[in-house]
Image 1 (spheres, rainbow, N blue to C red):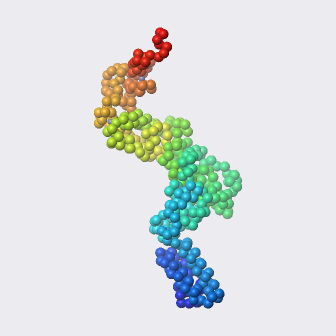
Image 2: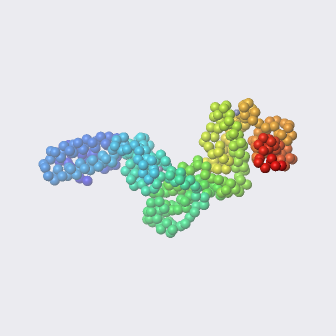
Image 3: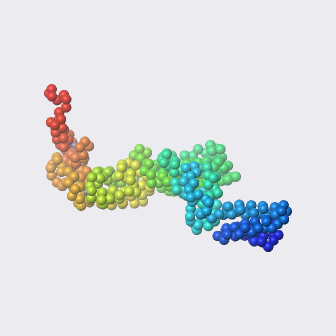
Length: 398
Ligand SMILES: [Zn+2]
Ligand SMILES: [Zn+2]
Ligand SMILES: [Zn+2]
Ligand SMILES: [Zn+2]
Ligand SMILES: [Zn+2]
Ligand SMILES: [Zn+2]
């Protein structure tokens, strides 16, 4: 691009022009550009009307303005929030971090470029790349259809993809001509190097079927999806692979702890002290542990394999049992005396040597209950009371 050099002022324009060509990015750039634009305007006014030099200067002015537009201060003009294909993009304030744009795979220069991050899936990109995005936010996929692909690397072959990237449809091949085909271990599909950066992730299907936690290469999109799904309790192990409980001892232990915690929950929600001590909040990061005993998140399974989950659940179990059996009179009073032998300590349904009546939830010594497995004395008593208090219609005739 030729620069106008006819006057002294235009010299400044040249220096900015050269400066830009060198590809240097400095904060003072914008200031200099603004100054150059002002000077260029002045030059245009001073040059003879319709002269070639004036026309050149006008073209120059347009270039400078475009350049300024491109490099503009992030805090100006650009909206703070934009919604595109269900992404919720917020303008980033940070200027110092050096990030890579998820759309064009080049650096984001926070100092001079505006950039956005999606609060849903953490997709980040240049403001100028926002309108080129073709992939909807994976957060919506996570909320609408929160299920994992549970076949291990379900490969259909590059030919079934028409030798194109599964995401952006760019031509790819295994011989890297014109562009390298990279397989995503989660979807089994092939991607171009713009859509697959060889990120590593633990693959749910491999964990569920092989208890294999080795991270594998996945596409950008799969990586974001897997990251968002990590804490979601969507894996019903008992149904997907019940055999896992035979092979992974820790899972059996976890299942028992979870069942116990569910038996303790009714004590806490009726105990003022426990509510005030916010005991159940111990499990706030794993809310599903307070709701059921069979759903797992991938994070749970990672923590099972590292031993972290077993340790923390055991601690919580101990703390809960201590409240009910030792610290709290109100909860203690809700214990059971074994009605079969009428001996021994107060029993609680989560004690290990007990059996619980499925109908009335009375608690007995396990040995006593099996010896008298025919009937539960509490149920018998309750039935008897019911019969004498509200006789059913037919009973009058008897
Ligand atoms: Zn970009
Ligand atoms: Zn998003
Ligand atoms: Zn692609
Ligand atoms: Zn209590
Ligand atoms: Zn007993
Ligand atoms: Zn009963």
